[in-house]
Length: 428
Ligand code: CMC
Image 1 (cartoon, protein in one colour):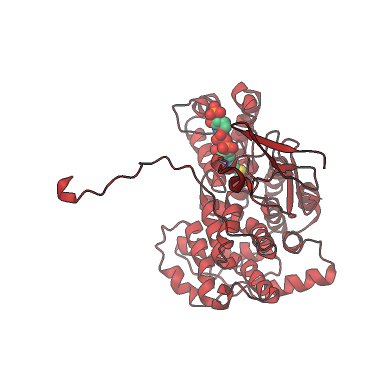
Image 2 (cartoon, helix red, strand yellow):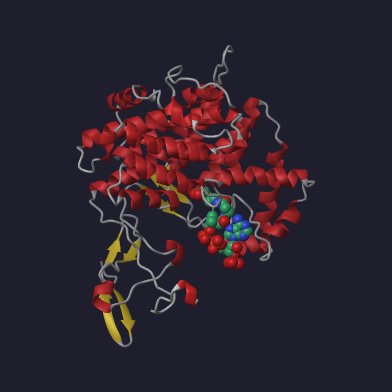
């Protein structure tokens, strides 16, 4: 490589190694810069800091490209299934038919959860947000499978944990919802389709039949594919950094669920619908809400807009917008919220504030509308995102451990008090 990097500090030059990725992304490796110069680099929110080299997901925010293991997201969303994409992300290749069937069957062997988990579930008040319940139940797997705490387990044993968590997350998610409703839980196994079984566990009532419409399970499957990985985002970085201490995969993913919960990350899909509802209740005046979003004295932001890395368009949002139209039409749903969303998008895309800052609809802008049409309640939206992101978290955790990455431990610039003497409380 011909590129050279040099940093000059007070007249002294330091040459730094340059790293190049397979898509010609280039980074300056500052790993040894402190030992050579005594200086660290500072980057709030890691806006321009690579934390790892990864072979899982490639995205180009300027060009709006997203690929899992080299496969374009639109092809996967159109032609693949969520479990196949999960296999691809975790094991690095598309499965052949035997590999797929074995993976599918291994997951279906583990969908049942220990009955004692119900006691943990019962300990939560019905006001508990399902994301908090989900992260707790996922972490509780460390108690039911204590061998998962051993950082030196064989990869066969890790693969068993992987099958278990993919299998059980849908049961946990459905149970978290049922618990919130105060209704009895359903057991897995009615459908051997991943999303159909989840929907059945969520929406089956005692004494009533519930058949999952294929259009609904297929739409949910597509949404899960679109959410399955997104390289080093907030929750994935959390999973990797927790796992870098050799904490178990279950504990690491539980932490990732908590990171995803926030409204600036996965929680945005819930926040988008709440925002659109508020605009509707307020009379549908999109200009007024646009003005609020642009007002620096107003904390309101247009939820579902903007992205740390996409500065042109979010390819997932493009696919989801089309899917939203298709799903609503197939289900015969007429949702005024969709019209408000489209109106808002139109105004925002013409507005200088949004154009200058390169703010476009992100994955969460239209996903909530599909979830609503599928009958999924708003507080479960981020749970759906977590189920979708699970294979990505697993793949990233596995890659980090396979590559024997060091414990994550950023540095800081201290800006507090200098040394001072302790003064006894009576003398203060
Ligand atoms: N509405 C109004 N202004 C915005 C918005 C928005 N949604 N997003 C960013 N801005 C402005 C921001 O005020 C700032 O303006 P200025 O330069 O005048 O100070 C500028 O755009 C840059 O924003 P930033 O906060 O520095 O950008 P960031 O990369 O740190 O934040 C973001 C990215 C996604 C957190 C942010 O765009 C946001 O808060 N969006 C709304 C929440 C949302 O939809 N989150 C879901 C993200 S996609 C799902 C996922 O992967 O998690």
